[in-house]
Length: 292
Image (cartoon, rainbow, N blue to C red; front, side):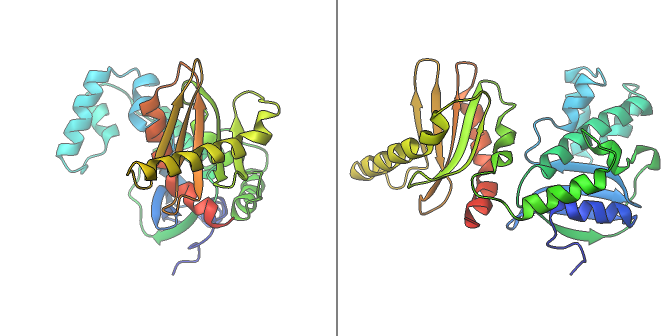
C-alpha cells in the first residue's frame, strides 16, 4: 500500500508535488476511477477527469486552430497505433502546430481536469509510483495548473482536501457544479425520498423554492414509483416532466430508490445531454449519499 492511498485528491497532490514524486495518482469514487494525475519529479505531465466538460481535442481545435476533420483523422491514426505515439507529436509531424501551441493546449486541458477533480467531493487516491516518460518542456508546476492560483496554492488545496473529506450536510453545492456549464441549466439537487435536501445548486437565486423543491420532487417521485409499479414497470430509474419553458429530469441513484438526483433546465437545454450527464454522476452521488 502506497503512502498516498486513501488520501483526498488535493492532499495527495500537494504531497506528491512537494516530494518531487513520479507516478500516477488515480482518483477514485468507491472502486470506480473518475480520473488520474500523472506526475514526473513533482511536475504534472497529464491529468484527466470523466467529469471535465472539455477534452484535449477540444483545446487543440479551439486554441490550436486545428481543423476539426484533420484532427479527427489524426486521432483515428493514433488509435490505430494503439496509442504507441502520442497525439501531440503526430500533430507536430503533420505541421499543424508547434511545441509552444501544444504546451498551451496541454496546460488548458490539465487545468480543466484538475478543476473537475479538485471540486468533486469524496474522491480518494490510489497511487502507483514509477518512472514517467514525459517531455520536461511539457510538464507543469502545480501553481500553473490551478485555474485561479493564489499566493499559497498548497494551503488552499489542503483546505479543499479537508472540506472534501468531511462533507457538511446541506452545504454540498460543489457536488453539482459539473452540471452548471451545460446549456439551459437552471438548478439541480440531491435529496432523499423523504424530501430532505442534501445538495443544491442554482444558476440564479430561486428564493423560497430552494426550501421546498426537495420535498416536492420527493413526493412526485414517490407517486411516480407507486404508479409505475401498479402498471408493471418495476423500479423506474428516471422521471421527466416537460413544461412551458421549464423541464425537470429526475434520476434515482441507488437500487433501493431512496435517493435521487434532479436537474431543471429551460428551452435551451437538451434532454439527451442532461440524461448523459446525470448518468455519469451517479457513482459520485452514491458515494456522497453513503456518508449521509
